[in-house]
Image 1 (cartoon, rainbow, N blue to C red):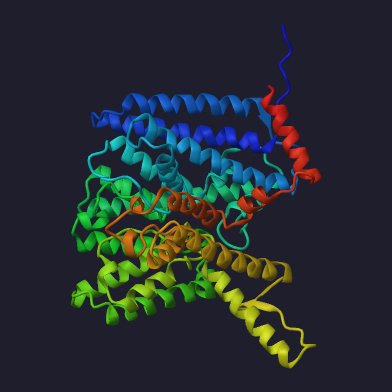
Image 2: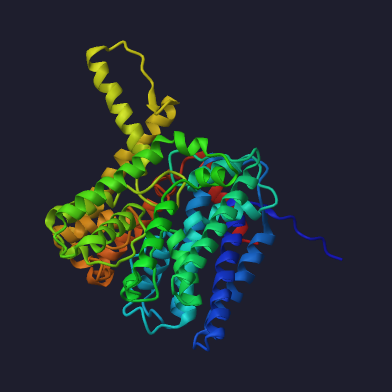
Length: 499
């Protein structure tokens, strides 16, 4: 009997295998949904699902988690997993003929998994229930994060698990809810699943059909914004559904770690969270300002609801549409444009910079201003009563500089493709902030097909940079071939591909 070959220790390929398996399971689930509705895409969706599952299981079986995980492994693994997931996610669109262009299929896939919600699917209605379910499911998977899901199910990940969680988690630091990182990932997914069920039931009670309630619960809780209708949530013309969405989007833009503690009966962290206070103040303040200045033509409760919906859908980076804010006053549009890259709280499914970084940056700037008067003064960077270590404060400021540089560079490149300035800057803000709709030619009643293919390609990269918060992708792109860690990683990958 021949001896079985020992699995190759390679974190990137091991997690890539599990990632392919997740994508395959999602495509198979979409095939089942299409079969229930007697749709035309059962066979291609199932074929893609089975192929991805077999490929993923094979890659997972041939590899294992290394005993020692280097930092370069962490960043490279996160980047590789998301690129693999984006590529795999494009296959259902191509196999079913929903999108014929590889570039458009990858764009739709990346927009789904990064929960951006920018689409190139035109029209949306008329496509099969299975493919529209896949769009929503891709956002739900990407909302909490594929790495978080993998860690939750991986039997052993060792000390590198927390580094992986931090590299993918939105915010300057990852938060450990339990002593074991695997249990932390599992608890986050339990809260995420429970929240999804509650929102789905609420939509169902408000008058949505069963399919619509499931699909919209996926894209609300993930702050993704994909809808199976061209008019998004405006299709239902229901005040009850819109208020449910407003509350759900606001909660999804908050910290799931806080909500986990609330479920456990610990409300102290919620009361003490200065980040949550800033988030609430920004929502209420922006809603009031837009209600006063929007010139939308709505009055009374409709004006309040339209203003609150637009602010929350942008700040939480969900991107649903009910009102055409592209026709509002210039002041209201500018305010929404400024909200696009900000995002919600750290530890949420929202994209953007995050409230906690704004607080840290304000404290850091205050300290540096005081040091101009008192050069020898020792004053830490604080967020409320919490003192930030200098390494974390420096990381926050570094991220903000990179974010500003990314936003500006993407906007300039899009302008160079022939797009007008308003559309280009809003495309950069909405792509990097993972929001979805923008202003100008990509307003809430339009889509990204209004942009040239080159501009869509740049926006695609911006979506990945925004969702992974720059560092994993940037380090994977600029890694120096002569670096010994990179050389070791490439060598292990080469050996794995020879199996």
